[in-house]
Image 1 (spheres, rainbow, N blue to C red):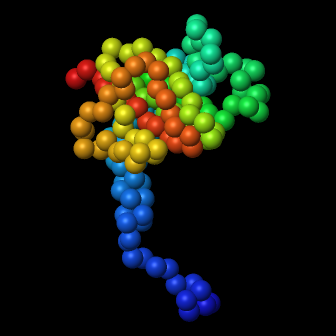
Image 2 (cartoon, rainbow, N blue to C red; image 1 turned 90 degrees about the horizontal axis):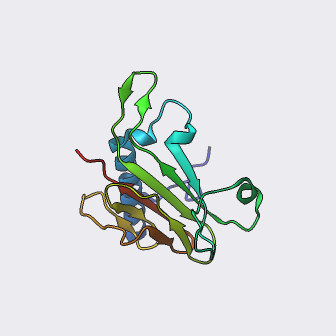
Image 3 (cartoon, rainbow, N blue to C red; image 1 turned 60 degrees about the vertical axis):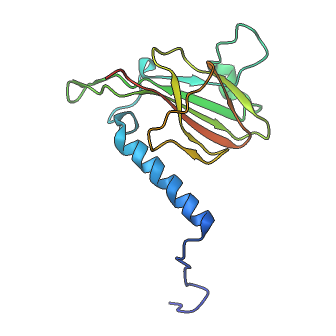
Length: 162
């Protein structure tokens, strides 16, 4: 065992560490608040849809195809999670919000088409600008097309009517 500066951890929270801690807390709060992120069973086709960045095609729906899964050029991906689903084990309805999880690992911005929902999409987390919407203040996505900046993650929710 080594008890010197090599193995000591600096637990002081400077500004970047405070930001990281706040971000991780906001992720944990989102997971705790939404059963969609704590499912007991594998996703079914009606529970989710895989999204890819839009191409220049006008009629592009932005859904992943088998060719997209095999393409080495795709560096961004999205997942739509339907929040309202039947819990098969407990025979209850989860009644959660719908979510869009958008990840972009490329050096360029990626545009995704969000599924049309009855309620507007709200940005919960965006790593490109440090935005965390854990306070509940709305930051709505203006269009059904969401742009994810380079090397970023965006989490959007379409609130269930309650």
